[in-house]
Image (cartoon, rainbow, N blue to C red; front, side, top):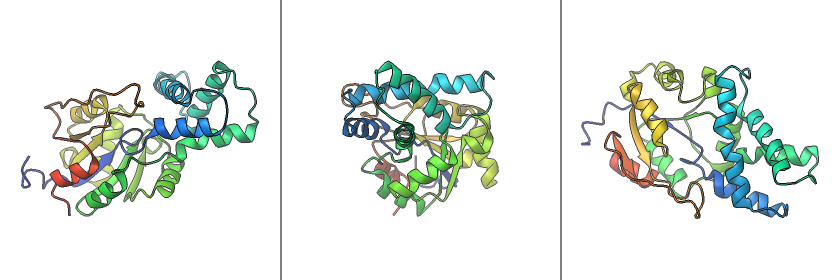
Length: 237
């Protein structure tokens, strides 16, 4: 895409878990540092595996509106039992649950976001709740202009209300918003709502033992190996 062709983009909305921060590596390291005698890699994958089923319980109406922090705790309680971990007290469980607030950014994320922020409004568009995303931004140095969450719209992605909500918040057309994500399903849902899309390669999102296919999809507006490369493609200084 030429420079003139992308001048109409006003807002970059970012998926967070896996796209901007390394959930797998962060959780695996913290779990292993706790000395729980479990495989941190497997624990991280099991915790994340419960994420979509838990959200589906809310979307189906089985559960009322529930913050991701609370869904994470429900999943955590379940997998602690699955991994036969019974040594943690309530304070330790609460601290571990908030590891999602302390996720480390990918090496290119902070510098890439600063460059992108110089030319665009940048915001989160995550299923994570506002408190989680705010603490994460403070901890990781993520320079958001605005934190938008499923909590704002009371709908989880991929509900259209989340993607269209960004254009409504900033009073721009859907096509003036671009979702930046490492997940094709997220980008597909955004594109169906009229947003532009940028895929970011994160081959190690699920750890080195489960590398992702990061092949380009021609339907996306941009494809980049990192947020630095996306900034290059968008002619950001």
